[in-house]
Amino acid sequence: MDGEVGRFGFVTHRLERDGEVIFDSAGDLFRRLKTNELYLTRGFKEVAMVYGSVEQSYRKTAQLINRVRYQTRDGTPMRTLQEQTEAEGERYQRQIESQAEEILKNHNLSLLPSSEKKKPRFGLARAAEKEAREIAAVVAQCATDEEARREMLANPVGYEEARRSVNVSVDDVGVKRQKAERKKGVAETGDGGQSGAQAPRASSKTKFIHTTVAEVQTEQGKYVLSGAGSIKVLRMALAFLLANGLSGRQVICFVDGQKSLHTALGEVFDCFRQWKVILDWFHLKKKCCQLTSLALKGKASRNEVLNHLLSLLWDGRVESAIEYLSEVKPEKIKDGAQLEQLKGYLERSRPYIPCYSARKKLGLRNSSNRGEKENDLIVSERQKHNGMSWSETGSLALASLATAAQNQEALPWFRTGEINFNLAA
Image 1: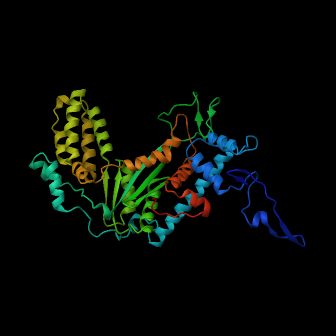
Image 2: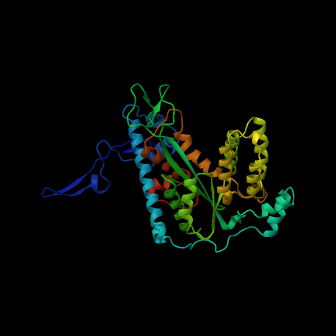
Image 3: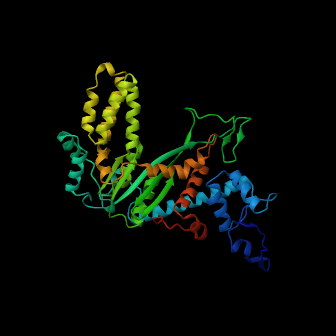
């Protein structure tokens, strides 16, 4: 048995009667192990996985725990630690997915074809929003003239009452996928990847493993979920809302401009009467910067158009923004197709672009940065270093354990094998 203070051996006992084994403490009290496998104590898992593998490389973690336990010769090998960590992460992910699907099943929300979707039955019958008088006063402060005020008030994205809403931030992150075969002379990182000066750079042919991370947040706290695929993670988020008594609220989803993510949100949260998507301001600004750079001639022209365009979009004036792009002088245009692409993007995103200036004055969120920060904590800080590449099971398992640690559920999980599925403090 591997423990946080060292390795222990135990004598087992067996009771036989007439050559038949009646009781064997090696297999009847504990699960049977594979060859060279060891039982792991809760303390060992905490030190080696939560404070070790989740935060630094398997190689460094193995060296540290073996040195601390004075087991420099017969300590835990790096590859063994990697296998133990991945197995634990896989068990945790299977449990939380199974738990979420059981909750959805109990609410009659098993996976159904689109034609069999049921009518919305959760959440508020009517959107809980700020009072019209308060909104009008704030818009009047932000508007530059009467025309701007009317257009800002006509923006289709409302101003939610935070205490009657729940925020869901969703984002994807990709890490390099490990190749099936390695080139000769390329060193291994010890983390299932390639490292050193000979490690190949990412190219257009590089394949990635994508992990979706979602954060559910209310005034009471937050809970983070991760997994492979937007639909799977969003269904876990839906189960979490139902299990924590949040089904009576409206759902506010903060996302970037990824089309597949918008589609997934519609498939999962269509069971709520009141839910909406808000496009992250940073991603909207970034998209405008990219396309105006491609569409317009010269830095001066680009900056002139971009600054006015962003000021219109900050006030949620999408119609005026599209009209302004249509009136750009031909001599300033380098690639008209890119300009048309930007206009089409704004038109498609119209239902998700709020009046950011008014929301800011009202103390409401404009960004999906909370979801992006969780991506950094759970995946990027550990798995996106130079030369690293991962197997799909290894990457997702490590992200699962990082998620458990972020939700303060790792230690209860090691102790009981159960997941609380509650808001973290």
